[in-house]
Length: 188
Image (cartoon, rainbow, N blue to C red; front, side, top):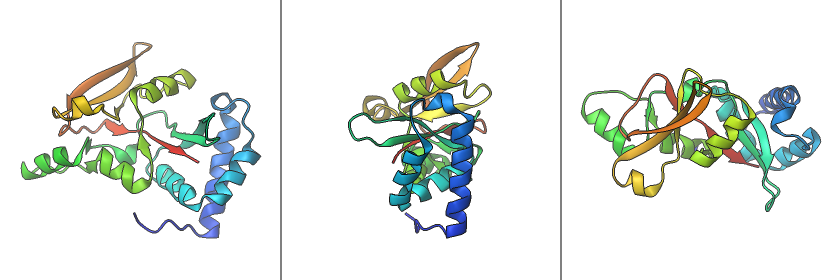
């Protein structure tokens, strides 16, 4: 992972952006106070860097809940469409390498990018829960963390919202499209 340090100015700017988004979308995190989130972020510089990467790539991270066991706040990409800076990606490294051997140039792979950012791709269950908070991916699609039994066969899953419903589909891991990126989750 790259250095996880932000300048004081960058940290202040990011915290202001996160707080503004938090206040604007209170329905995503009812019962959670910004002061508690900010205190946790002050102790977690690595998490603040990951959030800056989510923001930099167009994810518009926001708090969507709190883990009842650990107390961790759950940040998720809440951009209306799949984050623009994470599109044109294959699902995994094997898919990426296959496409590169074919002379194609996807941006990267979901699993590699998520690991580099310090976040997790959303599971199907997390994606369904996110879609209950707002309507996401009306024009785009988001790769989802694929169960091992599907990934072992070279497949991967993705989701979107069309016709007022959330759909989960499948594709092969090497596929990449302009309108398909991925959403991440960060526990702080």
